[in-house]
Structure formats: structure tokens, C-alpha cells
Length: 143
Figure 1 (cartoon, helix red, strand yellow):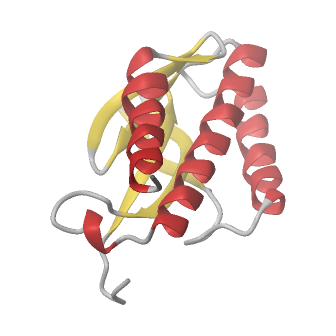
Figure 2 (cartoon, one colour):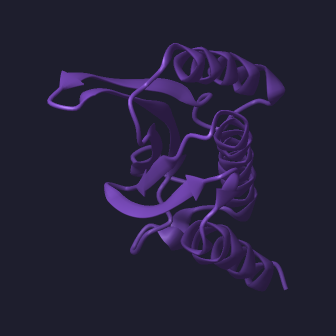
């Protein structure tokens, strides 16, 4: 893989007023995730945007090497699989927080809205469109 391979970011943000329990859970999750594995491009980071009209935005952000054309062919399978595992782990943590604190998350990838985590579950676009399709492509490349 080339040194100048582009990087995309997956960003999941709380879709409500950020209460103290939600902020505490997000901080704790950021620390917990950091210690769980060796992350390819670094652990998920707490994402905080300053207060705007609707208050501050809080979430988690994860950097991954892009697999979008024309770069996908340059991404080795081991790294791509590691990124998939990282994204799954991050989304599972968001599902846990969502279920425990009844909070929803909007998920953006590479600057585009791609789905939601609500009521402790990923929506279909995340579970099938992102995770399922990514898994299918990787499994096809390994055969």
C-alpha cells in the first residue's frame, strides 16, 4: 500500500441534546475502545463540535484507509479486514450505548450520511449495506 493512500473517516454523532450521562458514556467508551485492540490508524477518537444553534455535537470518529475507487485495489486484504473488524467493534459499542441510554447516533462515512444506530441496533443500511456488503466483498476476494 502506498504511503499517500487516502484516509476516510467514519463519524457517529449523538442525535439529541447531549446529557451528562451520555457524555460520560461516550468518554468511557472512547477509553474502553482504545484498550481493546491495536487499531490500524489509531483508536476511535471522541468527536466534539462546538456549540451551535442546537448545542454541541458529540460522537466518535474512526479513520480508515479508503477502499473507494480507484484506491480499493491498492488496499491489502489484511488491512481491509482489520478495518472492517474495527468498524464493527465501534458500531457494536454505539449499539450498547444506544440501548442503555436510549440515544440515537447518525453515522457518516467519507462525508456522507450512511445510517443510524437507534434503540440499541444498527439500521439496515449499516447492518446490510455497510457491514454485510463489506464482508461479502472481502469474502469474495479471499476465494
